Amino acid sequence: MLTPAPETVDGLWEQFKVDADPEAREALILHYAPLVKFIAGRVGASLPATVENSDLVSYGLFGLIDAIDKFEPERGWKFETYALSRIRGSIIDELRGLDWVPRSIRARSREVERAYAELENELHRTPTDEEVANRVGMDVHDLHELFAMVSYTHVAALDELIHGGDGGSATLGDMVVDRRLPAPEDALEGQSVREAIGGAVHLLPERDQIIVALYYYEGFTLAEIGQVLGVTESRVSQLHSRAMLQLRGWMSQVEV
Image 1 (tube, rainbow, N blue to C red):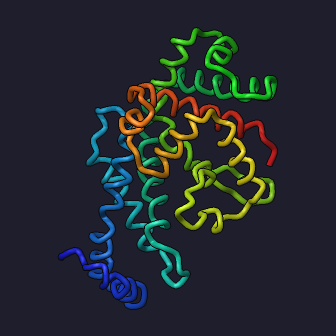
Image 2: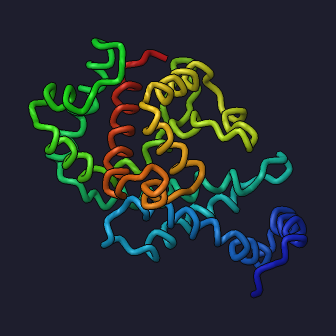
Image 3: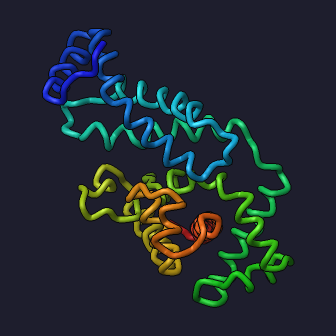
């Protein structure tokens, strides 16, 4: 079946949702398949070369199908916005199941998260790499090596839910503002959570904030961000990992 022209998409949604037409469902999957390739490419940019992009696309396709089945066009939401998080989530769920990272590395990364949080509270500023390394008993080179080893484990860090005391929830990614689009937090509850995460993002060093914004909202690869900042791709990967550890450590200490 040929991919439908854009002007027919509304009709396909009506056929599928009203008449449960399986051919309309298939046509919608084909039409929105580029979303899966886009997300798979972004996720794959932070993963080892041994991970096949075709596998990521396969994982994401399950998320797309789930999004199409559950989407409610009458609510007036843009499907692409609705589907992106579900495609990404499907890919991440599969990746987590592979559990590539040794327990010792995961344990060490949690120590670094706690160190960032503790030093932030003590110093009332973002700690330096040297200060964090001293707190956890390693040298700066080893800390940077740790960032490199866990870089791909944090590819979904901005998509993980943080739950608030008021019953609402939000993700770290929801807090990085893209002023060109309607605010995604309008569809979420838990204002105290959003404010806390937003504050955490703004506590990051300016360069780390740029990396978070370019990677998660502008769709830049790590290599492209390196070109923008004038550093190597591996250095961007380290800075990205550091930012994720800081955010996770800081949020673990916040009462919301």
